[in-house]
Length: 612
Ligand code: FEO
Ligand code: CA
Ligand code: CA
Image (tube, rainbow, N blue to C red; front, side):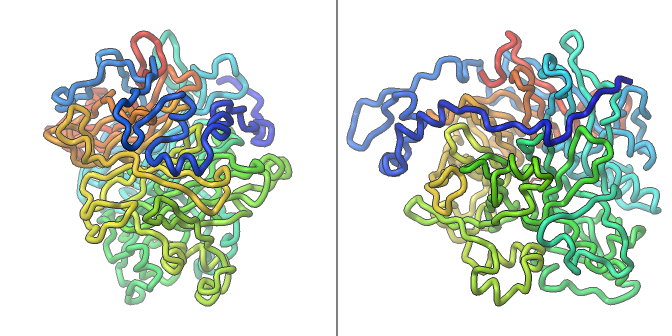
């Protein structure tokens, strides 16, 4: 085992890179020009491309040589029990559920024991991010830590039975959730794990702490004074300029239930707003672990400890994960972090449920100065929720006690933040079609995947289909380098507009835009025909879409990250076959009665940038 000097987050802090692209765009395309141009984007202006202008016949198509030259995977090939990929690419399977975190750790066995699962990769692979080891800059694209979220795993897959029968069974399930931090390196072209003190699991029973305005609120304390533990339903992710990882707690309500053993439980107004019920999703944790029993008065308020963005320092194995309350309590899908005006840090966040909202947090001050002073930029700032207007403008509405109606309803910011959804209801935010991942492009457009909303019965400008079974992607741009309160927006693409074509896709979920303007789109939902969920690449200027990869029967494709040279991409295959080995035996590693979620790596055969 190598030992190495760990750099503190402060030492690893990076100032924003010079972005000539962005600066030129700002000069060449004023906000007014962009708005008048309708769909013509500032990026188009930068490339000197005349896009469609009203009444003008001759449209010069943008030329972006090398941007997406690969041969698309045909839609007819995007089916079946094994992944398929463009003929110009290849993939390898890495890090299936149950494999040891480190080479000498406990091998996969089904079902795992709770003790083994704590030392193995979790299940329900979702968001992930690659962190190069800062001590080895020469190996930045071949040696580092991969941090992986583990969103969910049904009992039938994890335990091999539909209900837990003991606290030990519950512990297995709890340890399969959370986050894995694992050392990976590329040796002779093959990615493999290495032993490192940084490798660890964070799961439903790992001690956590709280920071920000709600941290010491009474509604985050339980009657028995138990320590705050755990993170669950870790969906999408984010990462910070100071080198930390952010994991997002999404459907946390589904792990709680009520036995009514000590008191009769009825959902409070706050619990109703987050969807708590007597049986959750049927995990049965509450039957053996009273912490998840909503009717156990000793653990009153335990449920308020979930629904947060959680910050983790991957290079400090002793770091206690911190729940950042200033970022609000939602069913957090993902968090896109960028640096705005005066180096304030900005987080774009979605609440993934039908008719929920889009949020933004702006730090109070220059994040570099705050981090150097040992202060989290996430602890002091302003939370906003978005209103989309029909004229393609929008407004970020502040969620604070400065708003008279919010001041009437909430006594403190802590009250407000624990009940963020109810606060957003008051200020008239726009109900969206399930905001999933968000990504910020070099030209400051912010892309938001709205996966679908079959329950929508009234359309609005930003969510124009009612119902919306296939989803869409919108993009918005703030009027003041991410820190202003007004923005412009447009529909980037309705997924249904691709239907009937070779590039057909539906239910966009994970998205990531690379520095060249390739928008990677991973899907989670029904696809036309018998296509599996897939990974596509869109050109953000032409909006052309190409299929790069398709997963297996019953899976979703999720989580997108690359090495710094962008020659390796890592993505996740979640719930292959929905747990049915007859549907797929993915990933064909060892004996298993169930398919296993796994991270895969993707490379272009000619060694080029992934997506090119
Ligand atoms: Fe965890 Fe909304 O996907
Ligand atoms: Ca998702
Ligand atoms: Ca989804």
